[in-house]
Image 1: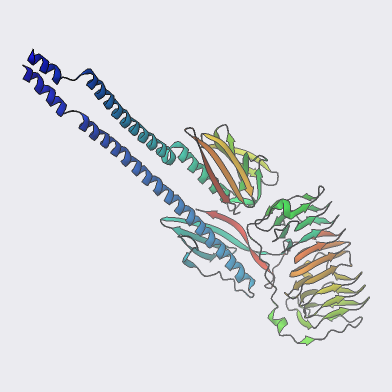
Image 2 (image 1 turned 90 degrees about the vertical axis):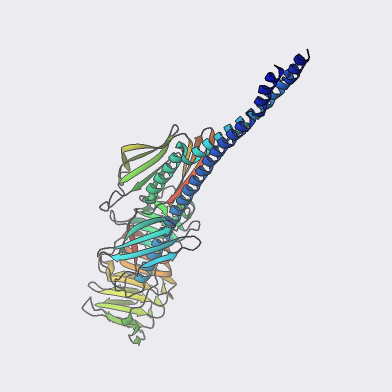
Length: 405
Length: 172
């Protein structure tokens, strides 16, 4: 009987539950661990996928910007036959495991860019439509815009008038009391508009004030080939003797002068249609005038500075026709003083490397581009958008629309 | 008597039983804690990767970036305290001005976005739909820096605060 009791007790002890318990625990922990590993793998894959998508998107954006800049460079290099830039494929994106490809197609009234970025299995395509737009959009500069007290601005509705600088330094745009801007005020990329744009309490901006996504490219003026090949003439002012151009506005007369120097009280009249390249300095001494006669036109290329004395004037007698007086400054033109003696100055001025100082008691009409721009007291400015584009006009590509898939 | 004594010696004493039970209990509890902790870790990781908070955060980020990237650079409306941001975009190629808007804001603990028509000149909006992008949001802060717009979401993930930051550049 004692043996019968002992055996079952010993057997039960020997076959105890520790091992099954331990095995069960191990299996449970293994299953949980496997689940965790699987979950970690899923999270890692999702993370890698998101990273690849973001990298592909960045590559597509980079390709788009490169295509845009190359198109602008092609446009700036006159003459241009209108053909788009060549497509590229699988260009490595610096600093990232990604590539981009883009194509630019000519769709007649616009160009369309399609840029595709690839990173791993991720792919992203962004699109943009570009059109050629004039750089004469109002007042555009690389550095400083200083508009004094009381200056009045006017612009047609929806004309796209803007005051714009590439600069991001404090007070790059100063709009004094009483100034009303009927359009946008734009500073360079990354600029803090509160610091860059200095306005007074009575300054009114009817449009938007913002910093641009990219600097605007003001291409240098390229002297037309026909002017380059024209023989140089020494300028001698003779009272009452006009510079006479051709009758055909499509075929202006080319004139290449060493300088222009109009003496005190002198009046130099431009008649007919001409294209004048002044190699040296253009000087309008006290009370002197340079006048584009009614029905005439002048494209003026400044190789040197334009210096103005007191009470002088550069006048265009073609009312509401700023196209009749266009002034381009080569890279050697670093200063231009503009004074209008008539009631209204009509003209387009593109001097991207010159400090442009406008002294006017009356009205300016047209558009201005300079390295800097200063508008003195009491002047008023009316923006007249360019209506026709010449092959030699400085243009830039403007975004019509951007979208992505 | 002899055999009776032997039987008593072969049985477990009360102390042995108590020790055994306590030891087993300790092992069982330790194992239970291990399993429960593992399960909690699993659940936490699941929530972080595939849970509602994670999915909502991803949806909010993608929606925000998609809208902002096609928005107009020249105009946006930002609350002075950064509690909402409104952006404007083109409905189609025939639109000459941005004619649609999206307003991101926090409503209670939900991140919402209003979509609708926008009159660019009159600066008026007409809401057409409202969508909830994320729930369990404890804070949403927006900021505009030049052409980029940033959204910082703080989400309550089962008592733990998770911050999600999104930023995008406006292209139009």
